[in-house]
Image (cartoon, rainbow, N blue to C red; front, side, top):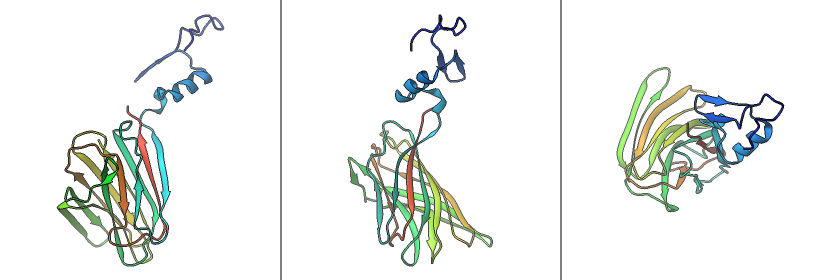
Length: 209
């Protein structure tokens, strides 16, 4: 930015910004330039939308093939109003390596379903998918969120999940992992062994702090 020490006689030299320490006065053009360069500290820790997709009736899967894994260490996947054509739908995740979906037994998960009468623990290792507690029964619609960590790094990628569904007041929380120590560059969300009947799924990146 341009030195502003002579502007108006009171603005100091070019403003500076650092975590917990900002000095000077930023003009609108300054903020615009910093935003364009992804250098504006005011956005650290904020969510940035990568993509939103709508699952049509009878779709079995929704793919996110561009996830900006080298930009973000943390991603957030949100699911809203996801229905299923029939039966009870438990949603799954699978990850992509170099654009290819891995269907090997490289996934594990554990979560607990919560309702007004009892809690039910669920867990499994060595699966070909990562199941998470966003599911529907009958005409209920599913809503939930999945946090994903370190997808672009060549180390184990961890997933923390939370979800609930419909009028029964049933919710769930838990986590899972992907055991291959490789970079993940895509995400597949599936309707398990059923089909979607609508639903909006969004993927966000979290700015580094």
